[in-house]
Structures are given as structure tokens and as C-alpha cells.
Image (cartoon, rainbow, N blue to C red):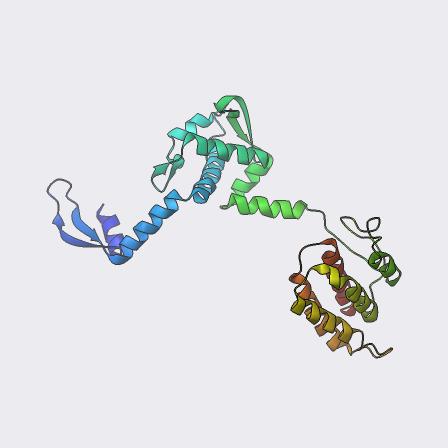
Length: 272
């Protein structure tokens, strides 16, 4: 107890106001302003549903890993373990069940056997992916799951050639634009500018952003003067500006098409 008091005093969270008490032998202390603020923060954190859910998922996963020698492993044992507490407050049975459902849906654990809560099974075990999460020291399960979903998402590679522009800009794109668009050669600056000019009105940009995008496309095309393209450094700068304009547009097939086209053109300029 004395070590804890000394630590909190050193952190300027509490201060002693008297000697050891007659019953406990511990010094009499009071909260300082910083300590009261920290206490309020911890109280709010303890009541935060999202934080409790994050703790439940992490705690359940690590508890299962630590008790794999017990077969079958019943999740009811988790309720009697120190891991069930979040900042001193025990998780409810329903909170644990929600964590189990989430972990099972993400294929980190299996829940089988007799019901623990509603239709959630009481016999739990880690999957190989669940073991990997524990061994990797992952602390934010939700962030890990989101990252894995992103990794599993099919990459979109768009290759565009000038001959496809007319088809895409005359409203007959349903048959040529799907999750990804497979074409062949990178557009030259003038062709890229033409594609941007044709598709820009459908990007749902605000008037100022649309005007900026069209100005950059016009400059990339040499101001409409044939064979008067800007020098390479200027082209790169304009393409980066165009890409910045496109990031503010809603996520549509047209936006993705233009983002990929700009990226491919930049890659060609850099020798990619």
C-alpha cells in the first residue's frame, strides 16, 4: 500500500494529509486536482461501451490462449478470472457473449457446444489466426481485423488506352467498367486531360473544386495548343494537383478510374 501511495504522490495525483490510520496503518490521503481529473476520466472510460467491447475481445482471446490445456474449454471460466474486469468493473455475461460472437465471426475463435448465452456456444478454442493474433501481441483486435479485411480486398489495377475514352464518356460504360478496368497503355498527358475533362462533370465536385480540376486538366493539355505540352516537372506537378482534387470527390467508378489513370501516368513518367 505504501508503495502505491508513494507512486501516486510522485505522479502528483494524491497527497498525504495525515499519518498512518489506526485500523489499516495506511496514510490518510486526498485527491489533488490532477488526481480528480484522472479519476473522472477513468470513470468515463469504464462506462464507455466501445472501450469495454475492445477490452472484452482482447481479454477473451488472451484468456483462451492461456487456458488451451483445459479441454473442453468452457467460457464460463472466464467469468471467474481476473481478466473479466475492466478498470475494476466486471464485464457482463452479455458483453462477453458479444465479444465471442465478434471473434467467431472474424474466424479468430470457434464457439461450439452447449449455449453460454442465447445461441453462443460455451466451448471455445482459438483458430490458427487467433493464435497468430495473440503471438503477435496485437492489442487492438478491431484495428487488426480492419487491416486484414483491407489486405484481403482485391486490388484494383486500371490500365487505360486512348481508344477507350470515347466509349467511357458516351454513357455506355456499364459493359466496360466493373470492379476493375483492364486496359493496356498509360495515357499521354493530352489524353489524360481529355479523359478528365469528359468525366469531371459527373464527379459531383463542388463548383470551386470542379473549376480547379478543369483548369489543371487544361494546363496539362498545354492550354489547348497542339504539341505544346508543359515540361515534365510541370506535368508531374499538375498531375499531383489533379490527384488532390480527385480525393475530395465521392468514391465512384469514375473517380477511381481517374485516380488510377493519373497514378499510371505518373508511374510512366517516373519509369514505372
